[in-house]
Image 1 (cartoon, rainbow, N blue to C red):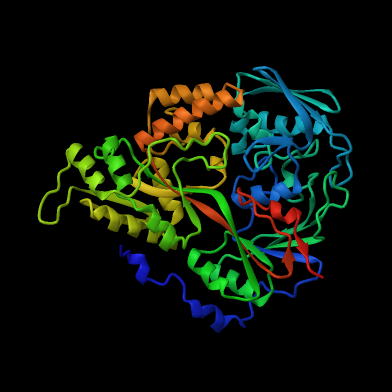
Image 2 (tube, rainbow, N blue to C red; image 1 turned 90 degrees about the vertical axis):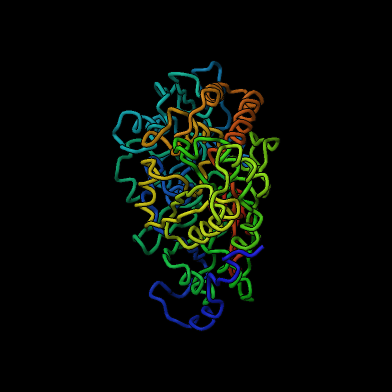
Length: 514
């Protein structure tokens, strides 16, 4: 099969070698005790109650501890809370470990936990995260080591929303000023930050858990991907994760001074349909387009093998993942049969059944991917008109429902089954939540509502298996790919372990060669 992307060069492989000696304004000599990591953008807000962008969440996880933490299968394990209980559907009790101190020396107690959540619930801190805790009635401290959450209604995902990446604990009395000087209890301490330049953190030598090996970390903001590659090749940066296109990653693979580690990831790529559209409201049309999409070609040519074909919004490593659902292998003949049955026979000399508008951002991979869909769907008689926009305009149209089809990715949000409520519940149309397809199915609503109130994991798994099965049949999304995590680093850094989530946990174990 010939794809338009095969004949294109996404990146000039000789470019790095030609300009690697270029002096860059963001470069500086590397200190032997400082690990320099490239990030693509500055964190918006390092207060864990406020920051919701990827950089804010991942960096704040290094600075702040949560009550519980997620393991590689997204099960929840002790963190600040040594153990917890759910004695009745409306009560969660957490027992804190002793000996934990904030970076300024203050002991961390139940009062700090209560303040963290009260400041969101009472509106003294304005944040979109507040809606996550809308079912919390009150937070009580019975002693310095015990915190009790009283709920308005049963809420099974509450525990997940107290984990790392969801909420870190801040000191009692912390207000908006915490964003300028974050004080947490995590393995690293905040030193300084300059917007669009860097964030500097250092090891917390008084950390209650296992101490990190690296003394200082400079998170260097580099907006341009070619410049990121040059920084790595010159040795003025040590490490970057998920910061390059597949082609640029392949170019860097040839550099003997760099190592590349890949691991299965949870970043989920999908196509969404407007199911209220006159053509796309028929699930047979959506199923046909799924059969007309050759995802193996996407993996091979666009992602150069650094991705897995998806069959659910949840990643395969997840405890609630269900594999026994309807699958859509590339089958143009079956796609045409479904389109015929839906009332769209091929017409005219070109065999066109209907036209479809596909919206995407101007980001290169997104545009190339849309071109692949255009070519593949044309083979079954669907003519695709690609419309590209700056991301803000594109995303605004998506939120307003001004689309027939589009493609985006979920980063991190698909690591808990609550993603189904967020994306597919009929009460979750934008701007409230992210059911941008305007999908509505009473059975799905009922299952999601039940799944959010049952705390027994085995029972929840059965419910979410049904959810995934129904969604696989209805196809409001075409599940495309789970993208691999790609970590590129110099030989100066060792003992790196990439997690499925693709966060910055590997910095806990990282070591610098002396």
